Image 1: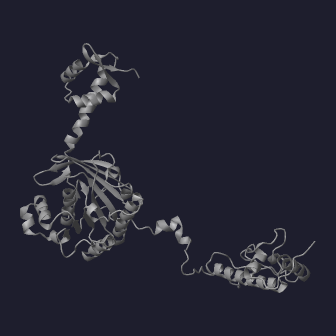
Image 2: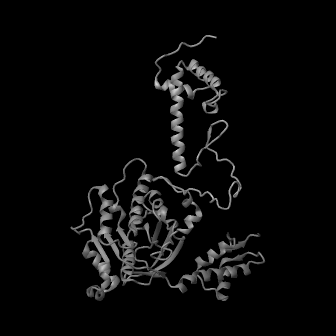
Image 3: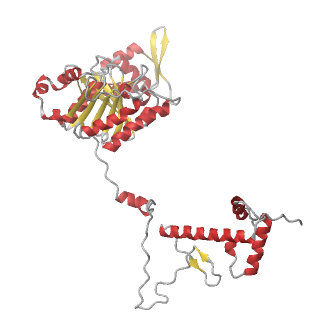
Length: 454
């Protein structure tokens, strides 16, 4: 068998490959005792012969690897991740495994103190795995702060309030700001934790916003300038002291500086998000919207406040899902904690607030809007439940009437319902009819209601 010619000057990469590319059946150098010289010498010569190296070069590489292994082992022991290596007396080899523990009093007398385990020392920058256990996390867990508005607005983070044009989102935000600064106990029937407010009105001048407040608070309270005015901070679009930066990247530091300047108010309202948000960049609009939303949420989390963004909804918004109604991609609600949707037609006295998010339960709150005072409040509970009661009564009447499965003329059904005292509109009666599976069929005599057999 021909042998390779020896190469006297090998590159460092060839030397390192000498041990990395060894054949699997051959023993590793750590498995050969130093006193077994014959076996060790044959092993070294075999390696040098195969790789075209000198025996001295292979021995130097082995010693270098041994030193690196000892240094790594000592570092792992110092970090508490491994037990100290032990030395076998017979073979002289060092092992990382700890020998089986002896009984507590084996080989000791009463006067011999028990060996104490050295304390766990951690190198700076390492993680204490014991403190990462769930039990330790529960022990040191900080109780969650109460919501600013119970089940509507959390204490820290960011959210968005969306509505159609002229639906009253600025008026709703002004109602919330007044209740917060004034220290009211409740807002929309929910417990309220009041505090300072920063309102950034990017679509209103100071005069326009004061006109809005005069309807909410009244002329007398506005002219009296009560104490809670000092907790209400307003940055209008015509404020020359704190203008909105033209550079998009400078707007988030500007917002952070304003919050710090006014003493970290509990609620920060940005009216509107379309005026504040920098222009979208890149091809992926979802990630761009999500990045800007997370930047706002980070400001609220770092400074311990809640930032509420006012935004517009599309023309096709139906109020079923406030996240999909926003004029944006789903990246905007994905980067926020709370999404609120205000549903109200211009000039209407009824409204609905849809709330959803990972920090609050999903709910639909019927509201009433008072045009004279521009105030939002909870709708009358009696009026809200009246429609459900009428539908329930109509469904019970139809269930008894069609129990035998006999078809009946629609006009006869309405006459019988009126005689039975069922006061409801035709729309409510039709909704009750559909809930029971009753269908309409046109005949020569007129419309006939037929209930299909289950």
